[in-house]
Length: 165
Image (cartoon, rainbow, N blue to C red):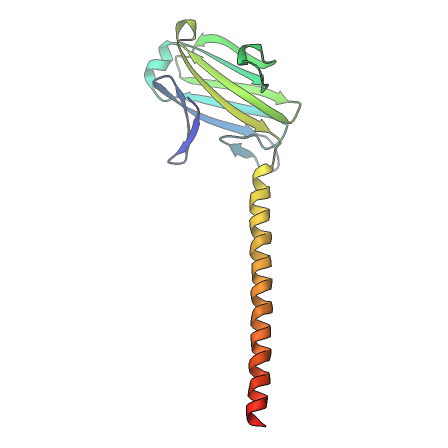
């Protein structure tokens, strides 16, 4: 399982079942996110059941710090004990104190029969570097194009001056 964007919805696959995932941070922009969390601080994560069968199964939610070792041994940051959610909505409130890499785990059914694992980061604005580098590349290309155009124009003017003389 994991997160994916599909028709503007964040969907989480838990075994054969689907859940809708949305996260929010109360800031000036009232940021909503589907994958990475923009910055540390108070965060609300909402999981809505898509497949009604999940309403009858116990659901557990955990957040652990991403490590090189097994997830079972990773430091636990948040845990929502297994419970049945007849209305189909889980709301998690957590204050992320540190930037970094985390893993979300959703279990459904007896003995964690169905599961989903999704990595995410908090406070990493790495995606913006790609856009910045692309923009810088385009600007360099434009400057190079202008320079080449200017040189050609100067050569054409010089040739035209020689032809007239």
